[in-house]
Image 1 (cartoon, rainbow, N blue to C red):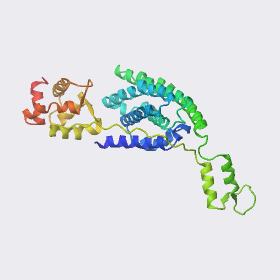
Image 2: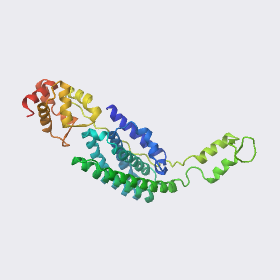
Image 3: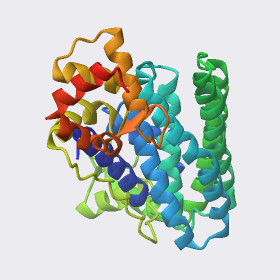
Length: 348
């Protein structure tokens, strides 16, 4: 497993932990502040991958809850959010400019926030109410639509991102978040934490430092119990999860038949591109790795050979697909000799 993959899974696990531990991801007016410290190191591609992991865990957890309000949310996730994020992962991997596109950053932050809120709802029966799931479903649907229409469809036609559409979506997201936080506070605060009576009890245990009645002086606890009661009274309510979140999916692993190709992939491809590499980028990496001059003719020959492979995703080569050339490489006498043979045959 690459270091980048570990980073993504660790961040997704941490955010999932926040969703399970408490309901603040739903009740806070700006819940992304809770997530931000844990995703600051993630690239755009990492954020999309972490969001997809969280949505996968939500989709696997929701059916076990048996709560009808979750059905519409699960449908929105499956129909809009997950397909859009999968396409976005491939788009970012193919286009290096998308890794630094500032218009994408808030959208990806919103994606991982919505994914974590879905997980938060799935593990709490009290949160699986239409007053929360309906605005959350609208936000998830909007995430899929704006990602598809303002980013992916335009990228496929070599057009710039629709920044104005993305900006309008952020305004709508904020409105939906305000509705979610109000509904969650009403539903989840009831019976959680401590009530006004306990807060009054805590206040009665406090006096001024000189023992006089309440005034403008700072209050000092007279007993350790007073500090404990006041802390409970002022702490944000926490509704515990009633079920476990489904585990993250197992990583796909490939057993390489050619050790030279395995080393090349791990060193040159895994860190930057993950499980698949765009053909033009892979051709350049192969030429550089074996020390062949990167002329236009050589790149075209290599790209022609790679394009002839049975590719699951057009324009990208996965590790198993490259390993399919192992028999040719073995007959040629190694990876360097195979690349040389491709140059001689002009990719035929």
